[in-house]
Length: 91
Length: 75
Image (cartoon, rainbow over all chains, first blue to last red; front, side, top):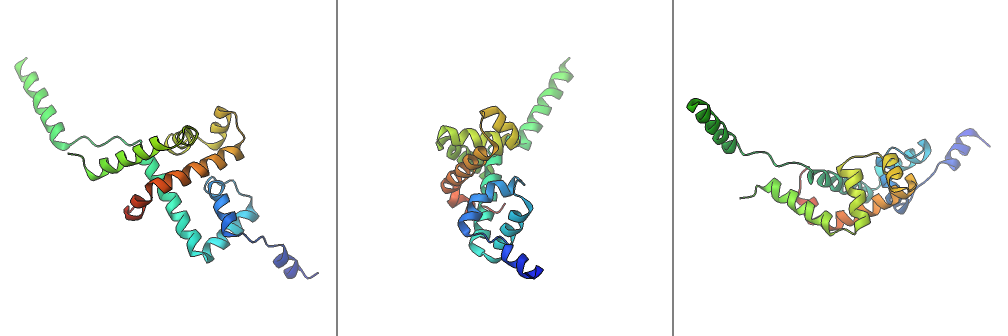
């Protein structure tokens, strides 16, 4: 069999369902090279899966936000500094 | 008064709290604490494959709860 034909026949093709199933492994860098290539080929040609991956990534980013500590308001910093300066001046 | 970012953080926390225990646990360990799949697998005494499957389902559940906010959120 000609090499190009063998390569073409051997190329793995993924369905949208496969892509969905492999999302966590893909983002974890855990797919083997061949599956990753097939995954990316599918993504390039499937707008629905691209959009889904985008939303999946946004979900992860949102989850990370749950851990963030809210920034301290500037006014509170100024107020605290003023209070400390006043206390130091009294001593 | 809560800022928009703090409101969003609150929404995310509430959504995570609404997840079933095993989904919340995996989101906390993998996505929030950012432990590796290998570390979480060791911690929960599960295979790495099982961790990825559970994490995927947990993220899908969280995505469903947060979808109105994901669409308008510009990350």
